[in-house]
Structure formats: C-alpha cells, structure tokens
View (cartoon, rainbow, N blue to C red):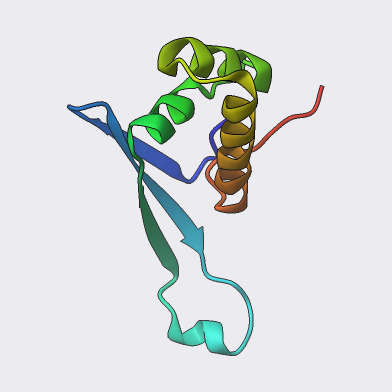
Length: 100
C-alpha cells in the first residue's frame, strides 16, 4: 500500500514519477532544513510496471507472476528483481508492506 505522503504521475511512455514528502527530523541540525523535503524518484519501464501493480489486494507472488508473463523472464530472475525493488521502495518510504 502507498504511504500517505506519496504522490505519483504516469508519463505517456509508461513511466512513473514518484514524489515523496519527508518531514524534518528532530535534532539541532534539523533547524537548518526546510520543514518538508520532497524527494522525486523517476522509474524506468520495469520499475513503473511493478510500482503500478502495488495495491491493497495483490500479494508479492501476484506481482511476480504478472512480471514474468509481461516481460518473459525466468521466475528466479523476476523474483530477485521484484523483491529487491519492493525492498528499496519500503526503505525510501514509498510503500508499506503488510504481513498476512
């Protein structure tokens, strides 16, 4: 699921641009930063496809299956790439993953 402070737009050739709003952290040096920082992330075609598959209904396995059928890659390569990409999105604060 997308985090609250995330917005995205789709560019025509199937590419996504994500904007993440980050709040200022506490501490002495944070006084010199703006109250809200915006980070822009531009995704390529593969990243855009995976990102657009993320919703509250699909599991990681569903996203991997869609990736394999769309890009005709072997399952192991798709699994490693997709899981690594989703992990990087979580670390950047773009998505949250719920464990069922």
